[in-house]
Amino acid sequence: MRATALILCGGRATRMGGVDKPLQPFQGRALVSHVIDRVAPQTGGRILISANRHLDDYRRLGHPVLPDPLPDFPGPLAGILAGLTALSDAGSAGGAMRAGAPEAAPPSPGERSDGFGADWLLVVGGDSPWLPIDLLDRLAAGLAPEHSAAMALGREAPGEPLRPQPLASLIHVRHRAGLATALRAGERRVEGWLRTLPLARVAFDRPTDDLAFANINDRSELERLERLDHR
Image (tube, rainbow, N blue to C red; front, top):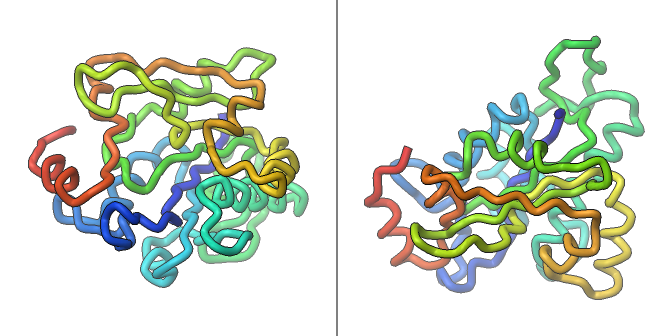
């Protein structure tokens, strides 16, 4: 499956004092750099970053940066809308966009592309440094013919029950218009919107998944996870 990753970095991080959380240092590098390392091999380097602050810092990571299309920090759904719009625009232009350039020619059959010529958006958070290295493959494997979206069910710590992980999801570009309508109607919850789609729920319950969806909400959590050695 060809997909483009969207890394959501546009939140306010109020529980961390308003710092730009994905740019905080974690084991020697910014949190978001670990996320990029995890998802880039899965999407052939096709990555978009949703951000609303410190845009130049995010651009230095080497991938296109998309500010929210709506004002006043409406939440991650606005970032997802920006990502789906970028995919839709690239598809309607008949070619793939390359990082650092406005357009590139579409690939020949069987040729790998570094652009965004994909119909699926792999949505991940910018504060989850240990995402599964096979997240895309496993979400895609959970899709039945009637599905046009998939969401991971995973643990945020060892021993916890599986919970919905809406910021580890796979969404078809056809849902762009529907998401725009939902946002105009006041929807702000990613999981709430995903539940309105033909949605596959995919369990990530292997022992190696125990920390895969650990996300960092405050500084004590950041310091605790930074001491762990998780490969």
